[in-house]
Structure formats: structure tokens, C-alpha cells
View 1: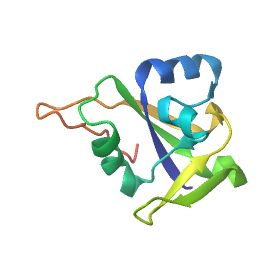
View 2: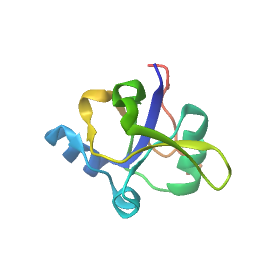
View 3: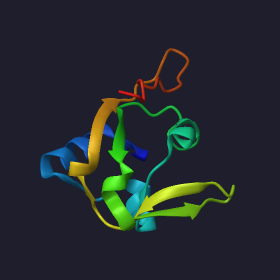
View 4: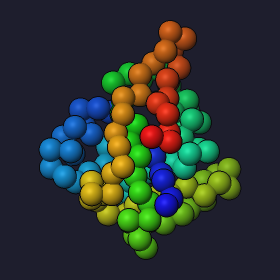
Length: 114
């Protein structure tokens, strides 16, 4: 299984859970696709794009369930990032956990293996 991750403001994610589908948040809607990160990328994604932001959720997604709809595209760094050009059916969600800030203002990640 290929697990990918999404960092999302909690209110937007909880609204998606109520609908069973996620259309994206801020930058996703602007760019026309849902941004995800791999396990190796998610820590830098949090630091770079969500620094100091609280009330976030970290969501684990079974990327294999997205099939060919999941594309892997290079960033400026050359790293391949997973992108989805359609709404995310939450049936592919493995779990969603809070992503709080620690005392130093950095995100405190949950165990990614559970």
C-alpha cells in the first residue's frame, strides 16, 4: 500500500468528512488539484507551507485506492509529489489525526504507522 498524506485546516476537513468527499482547500482549489505528500515529504511540507498554523489535521490516504487518478509530478526540487485532479472520495482515508503545535511552535506529528 502506498500511503500519502494531506495536511488540512481542521474545519475544512471535518466538513469534508460530513460530506464523504474532499474537494480541496485553499491552494488545492487555486491550483486545480489536491496536493499530497509522501511520508518523506510531509514534515517539510508542514514546516514550509503550514509553519505556525494550528487547528490542522493530518490525514493518511491509501494512494493505491486512487488508482490512475493519482499522478506523480515533479516540484521545483525535482521530487515527485502525489497530486489528485478530482475530488477525494473519503473511502480512501486510512485515518485523520490532529496536527498540533508543540511548545516550540513546530508541528507535533502523530505516529504515521498507526
